[in-house]
Image 1: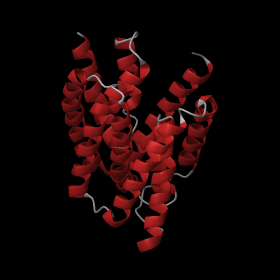
Image 2: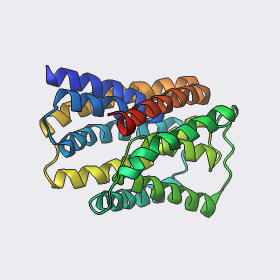
Image 3: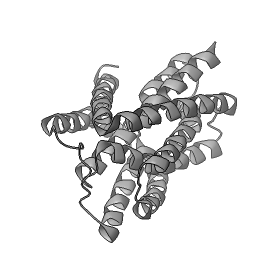
Length: 252
């Protein structure tokens, strides 16, 4: 029964995550509810062992249909990988409680800004070219990479928002670009957790297959319906993240 529950959650999580991020909002609570006595690090590591494959599948699908700026994204992914390792180290030194309490308000600001700017992300008008775009993308990769390693919730959504707001991408191109960096940050976290024995591979491998299946389906839906659809899903996912992180920070 446990395998059925977490595999189903992985399928749905892959679907949502491939569109705009936020798959952890589904899969992580499912793991914690199914295995309440397990070490949190093991459940997070098992989550990463599945989600990294779904994110990679989404990146590959988007890469075949969307003209990605690989000259900027590959350096940004490498910087994101390093940033995630740095963030994972930082959480062993500094307490993360302040970020846990601040996160709902940060997400609320992101949601409010997106709702206020109704045309934001509907049109693809990149603000930078060449070296300047690479520098901007690497800055996003470093910032969100550190955050993903240190804390994590909403990583994909933050990446999408920054690509839209700062680089001028539409939501479809932003989601596609975010996947490339998110693969690197997930991989860094997985390597660290696996090295410490915090992955249940017998669950993770089955969940990975389901996550990839959900991711492929979600990517096709996003490509079919375009930037406006992705924007709508972004608003729904960020709203759910606000409720979840607010509950965890102040009511749990």
